[in-house]
Amino acid sequence: MTRPGRQILTGLLVALGGVGTASAQAVCDRACLRTLLDQYLAAVVEHDPKAAPLVVGFRQTENAINVAPRGGVWKTVTGLGKMQRRYVDEVSGQAGYYGLVEEGDHVALATVRLRIENRKLTEAEWYLARADDPGLSGSRQPGRPPANLLNPDYLIANPPPDRVVPDAQRLSRAELVAIVNSYFDAITSHDGSVALTHSGCGRVENGTPAPAGRFLPPLARPTVPAAGAPPAPPANAPANDCVSGLANFNLSMVVARRIPLVDQEAQMVLGMAVFIRRPGSPTPRNVFSEWFNIEDGRIRTIYTAMFYPGPELAVPNWPPYEGNWPLPASIVPAPPGPAGR
Image (cartoon, rainbow, N blue to C red; front, side, top):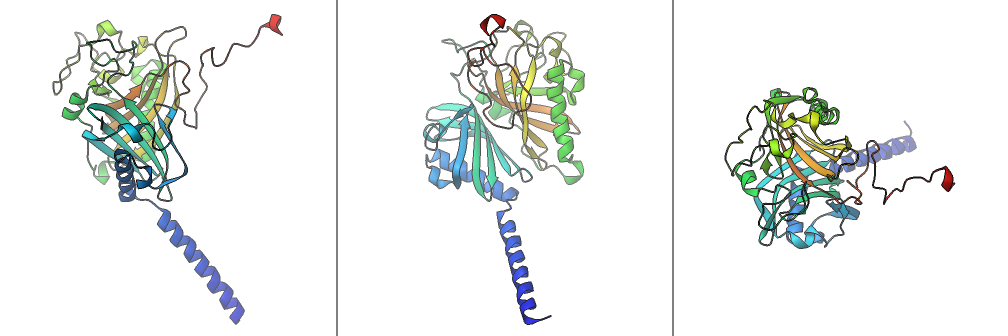
């Protein structure tokens, strides 16, 4: 080979080697994702966005409302609470926190989803449940428990799993996603038999256990047990707790379905979606994050952080959106009839 040819080949090899090195540097493994998640949470507690590697154009929402750095939780969160779980997904480049956060003398529940690209934070999505937030039946009433079922004590006593599942017992990423989708499909079709769940599967809504009868009318549901107490199902309750009563559940469709994070090591999956109620129902939409604990090929427990948005709030305010669903007439007026043309 001539000298110029060798120089060209050497230059190509160096260039390719540089590309490989740059790519390797940009990869963020489990430890990297966990470190950046902790760095971001610490920056929020410190009220200092500069303490985290945020990209230009970093986007953050809190209960579907866009928040600029130094606003929202950057101002209010003063510490992390007594129940904390962290999950990471090196395939999607995302990390998540499910746990309690302190806001001065108050405690809230949060799901936090972070996207990491080139070892920098590009997105943060918060689902927050605070004690005075509205719930399924409206605002919190004086002297009453939180309307949104917030129950930090129960979560502290009964947290989600924090584990490393042996390789031989892990399901694939595709299998975990399919199991979660079966749950959403069961709700949409009002047929609990569609869901791949364990008999007696548990669901914890904003920290409150929802034993058998989760989808039954309110008067047929059991009372909420104290922290640490086993859920007490109502008389003649179905055996399959987390999908019982779907036939009469006030829901038209599950929309904006997303599964952004699959932690294969922990066999935990984060799902997000919106419940749209039956036409004419005054019940508000429910926007939720759900952490699915999957064991032996079926859902064992589900832990949520969710909120009930006003009728005109665009939710979840994150693309991509799956499917179409009705919006209030105040946002999208009905088209004019023949007389109005």
